[in-house]
Length: 307
Ligand SMILES: NC(=O)c1ccc[n+]([C@@H]2O[C@H](COP(=O)([O-])OP(=O)(O)OC[C@H]3O[C@@H](n4cnc5c(N)ncnc54)[C@H](OP(=O)(O)O)[C@@H]3O)[C@@H](O)[C@H]2O)c1
Image (cartoon, rainbow, N blue to C red; front, side, top):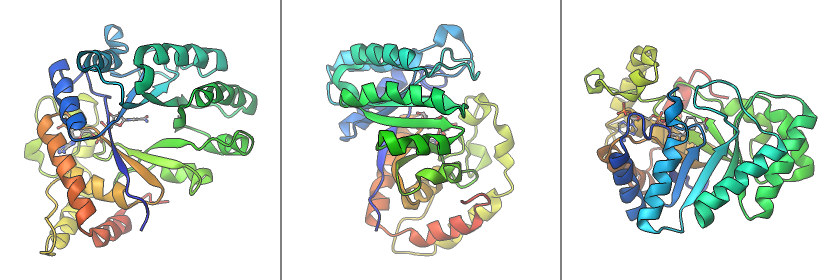
């Protein structure tokens, strides 16, 4: 069997749908359970409020200061110049060096991975310049990462020379996956699944509330996704197996799907409340203890865009 993916706590909604107090509670619990990997980005939360630019990392920094923690493994995605959800980014070498310096100062030994975020470029010279910036991070002992890359084939070509052991964040859930786009890196990089709930889908429509992530992010169309009845059917069949706990949420479906997918070394958790995080960590233990391979296969057959 392939290596089991690890869990990483996401921060995209910190300071947006999740209050500072709840962010602290999530991290207290995650850290207390022995997990150390946290994901962040300069532009979180992407709520289009200029006053909230870099708020998620500020909350994270405050938590670290309060607890005097030195052993987080923070994955920081850089390049964004604002939190407006626009493609305005700067991935040139000199800017990356400034950001590297900035995040080394802010997070010290807690910084583990330095990741390029959102690149639509295809021009080899410009991408080479970015990789030279990333190389400086590697020389400082950090892992190198990619996220939101429009032309992975150019990166893969240049990487024959640079030889990065990339960690790559990829949207990967039962309704939509970008894994296929990264074909040049299949078998040659360590992938991390994000968006495993497709932004906050619930199996039972009664679970949605005013502050539901899906509504806040404007993705309500997914609430009535045509695949949902099929999913309920697959869950029903999988629950007939009395040798393991039944599946009870879309989140658990997302975890099964990511856990068994090839090349996935990590699963990003977007828990917005402590109860959700508890459920995800408990289900992770269930996944390690029981075989849900048959459910994964039946989900895979239903996946419209499986590479
Ligand atoms: N690389 C990139 O470009 C990129 C893009 C997006 C995200 N990310 C990273 O990945 C993380 C997760 O992304 P995401 O927020 O899009 O993930 P997601 O898992 O698709 O959606 C998160 C939402 O799912 C629901 N949820 C989560 N855990 C649950 C549980 N145990 N039970 C029931 N519902 C649960 C919550 O919805 P409610 O709040 O409505 O209950 C939560 O807000 C982000 O925080 C960020 O760090 C990276």
